[in-house]
Image (cartoon, rainbow, N blue to C red; front, side, top):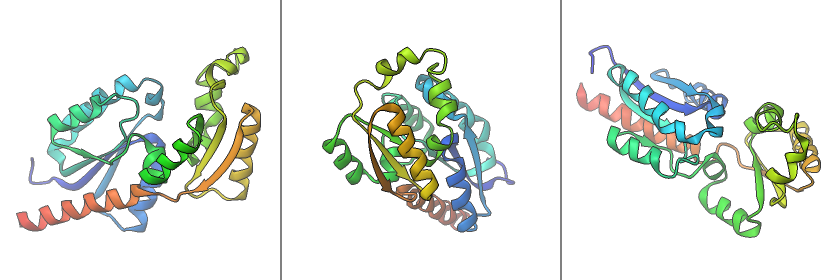
Length: 209
């Protein structure tokens, strides 16, 4: 670690970039930097652990504290194994749906309808790019039943979306032939997890002085 090391680095999924930046601004976390990996990695979750490790390795000498804003995100525990080896913590939860909704609420939603497809504000904004074009459904609409045939409901977990966003999510549900449910979550445990990481960084900096 160098003497010019900054405070904290958040390594985040690109799907959380807007929300993490908002938390940084609201809380005046001037000693916090954010580096995001492409959200398209969710289509190749086996690549997430290696990409996160590479960014930790490249950044470790420049920061006193590194925190990862990723869930497991389909890595089957491999991300947690990498982070244990690197001595870096991440936000608790399997995915952003869980830490936005909170674990208890998400488990309730899952028990109520296991066949639910979830939208966040990010996925709503980029639905056509990441889902329709990303899965090739614009070129092969016959694949819709393959991808969505086992779903029964679309649940929009809204961070800040207003009436227009809610209506857009409802239209996507109709497009997919799914029931629609709206849940306002705000930032869930994302804000509290980042705040805890910042307190640890600040406590460590004070101890080191």
